Length: 342
Image 1 (tube, rainbow, N blue to C red):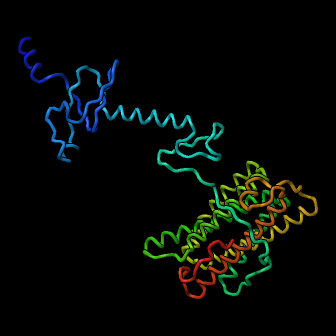
Image 2: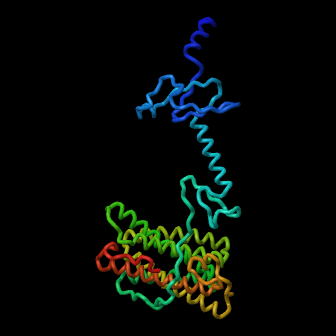
């Protein structure tokens, strides 16, 4: 063991305890004071300020007292304090609406992303021909047609004249084909290193539009618990069936969707008849519908049904068109997709 005298000699040569820092300027904080030490001023190995490699090198700094903190931690504390001040003033990240006053809700984003609008809005083209019908000619067309027709009867029996809940169930199913088709085309594009001709965006746009229909009718019709359970069951069965059907024959899958949209047009036409007859109350349109379809502020439920029916007619045309492309022996990418058709 070394004597106390030898220990004092070693301490006088080596100096007090050292801490490691990589900051260009070191901030030393103690319980009583804070000091700034330039890079290399108290280094164990003196640095040459003329060399960039040595300026960036790590430096050993002597601290005269115990309990000093690394400069990078102090700098981080200062940055966090500055961010907190910004949040308090309503100026950090992005501001949801308004000009950043005291009443605005600040949405802080570490990534520097400001919030945008929740969805795209547009004015529906209600002048589209609602009476178009693809007459089934081939065997696959007839199978698709009667498959959809067979699904209509249990739906009529279950919902009867409750068209609000019927529309809700219809939209949970109608939003599946666009998502499945867009997803499969997406993966196909990745596997083959080729473009889709815009069809991925078109089909996903269709799925999003159908989802907005659902969000709208959820404001109108309050589904019961067993209707919600039915949505789980029907969506699970239909998704898997449509997924397999699209893998086997895309032209059959798109034809099924086209006929499904024709049935949707019929259902919404009956919905309008009930509204016009006064058997269903023509309540004010939900705010989400007014925003999404750019409806007038005094729009009613009837106005909503009209624009939703127009959307379904556009989806009918797109899917029958997609099926025709496959029937002609081409792939979808060979025909430009009708982007924004709805």
